[in-house]
Length: 140
Image 1 (cartoon, rainbow, N blue to C red):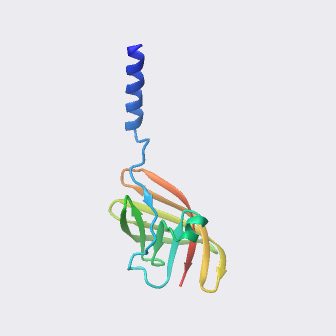
Image 2 (cartoon, helix red, strand yellow):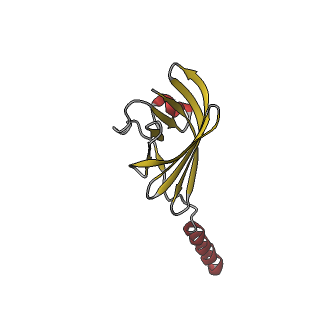
Image 3 (spheres, rainbow, N blue to C red):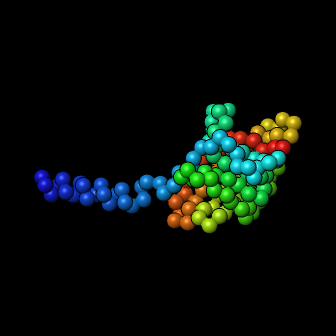
């Protein structure tokens, strides 16, 4: 019986230490970084969060993006931008620790603002990847 209990505890420890927990989390934020002034894209994890003004991503339309990771607002520099099809684009941003890929599709245009839906993937240098759906807008 003691051997079985020991084996169960050992297996538990090994499984926990094998990366089953996330190395980082993407936080929600309400205030945009001061660098965002004018045209921008800003996304939430879903429509409900967007209505509440809780975002997971914002960018300066192209040059820089901002995501809060583990409670710290991180800045990313644009690595590539692709217009994959009309109304659909992919942006890749990097910094020293992470790579962010955002792909988004226009759903609706209202004046100079475009409602968007898509996905975001954040990859750490340690190869942990967090993917989330996104909902938000791009516009001026």
